[in-house]
Length: 233
Image (cartoon, rainbow, N blue to C red; front, side):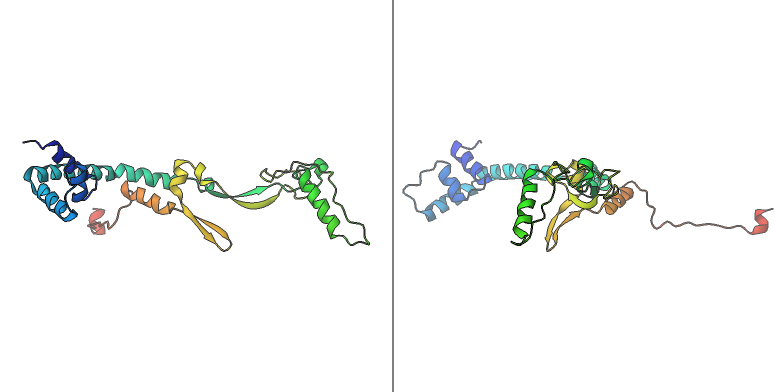
């Protein structure tokens, strides 16, 4: 026999996480003249109704099965994850690069400023640092403006000889590829800045090799060696 409309609603509210008292009220049963303890008794009686309890078990089992299905991870999924980690390029996350010096791309390889505002700040600083009885040493701007500290060094720069200077650059992790995101394991703040953490690529590659049966462990070889004279007989 099918449940009544109120009984079905009672079960549905229970499945959605409500208490028996809340489900009883939300199902539409009249509770205005009832105390909470009385509602609890009536709700408990309703839940013990064989039809109601059977319906609850049916929906609960279905809910558990759906949750289990969503949590199932296949061997293929695991292998795919290992592959992403093992073959990701760490340089995508953090890398050491050599960038141009101030003279690399300045006019006639003179000192180059980022913009006029930076140059003016340098002039003001030089003026402020000078004593009243001395002439301030004003920096020149003959190298022009437009310094970009992300460009590779000029190979014929007379100052840095094409070496520029080195720096460590960390990528915005929001822009990482799927492989890069799989390799990335978080960041830790330190007293000197921050530390980028990554998954163990060697371990991931080892896991792939084991999955593919590339390692033979505990190999036992039983050899029967004939006597030398029998071998040449």
